[in-house]
Length: 354
Ligand SMILES: Cc1ncc(COP(=O)(O)O)c(C=O)c1O
Image (spheres, protein in one colour):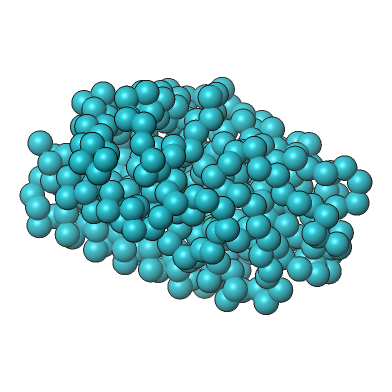
């Protein structure tokens, strides 16, 4: 069986020809596609700074370290603010941002948060919906601008999106073609795109163990290209067509159903808490830990059993009781047999650690 080789991993290989349900086409307002979430974010900041002298760019302290590093390469006025990522009802202290010329990037953690946008004088707000594409929060955002890394959810090699929500109070329009970087000849993103498409195809057709090494290596090569490209290129028409084939697929109904099913069968324990919401679809099965050692023990056990969770995120200095998160994908690729396997594997670890 193919899953005996590839296991249950994080990077999404494809749909195996399945027709997945679509949501009713949402009206996001103005939108622009990008090759990745970070390019959408950089575009937005450049677009805002073409209109306003930005004082400080604020990012949440708990965030992807690679994207933080990438952003520091591009902007030298970044500071961090604190918000609890594991409590969907935690609020941002808006009084800490003193200037209406600051830009505050707010993360819709795990697709479970609704951001309270303050009334009156406030900074410019950009909301990141990378973990909650098509979530309630993304559909009804009141931020000035939003973006998402689409490749975290859709079976696509690369993709991001920026939009100006209909409720935005900003008078800056989103589109300004001179923000894009130019190039002569071949689209500089082609290489990264083709490398990652190749790794997805290898994964989808993987039938032997040595192919697994190849697709993982190829995937990492593509990812390293993205990490070292800083220019923001317009998405080509064929690439946009590819992204648009999947952009309105209803991935959240699978995630919600699978995560609820798994939650109901996992044993209660003191090692981790499950970050979830009664009605909202989580990014995946979200296990928050107080101790990194305990997290690593479960992670090792999962990997031994061909379940490959993502640690979100390794470098942080949270002051809350829960400090680290493991995510196990719960998307359309998983059926009840897969979920039962994941549940049994976690429950066995809980029982043996009592
Ligand atoms: C929450 C979040 N936002 C944005 C990004 C950036 O997306 P991309 O990797 O597509 O640039 C990431 C990437 O890891 C992320 O985790």
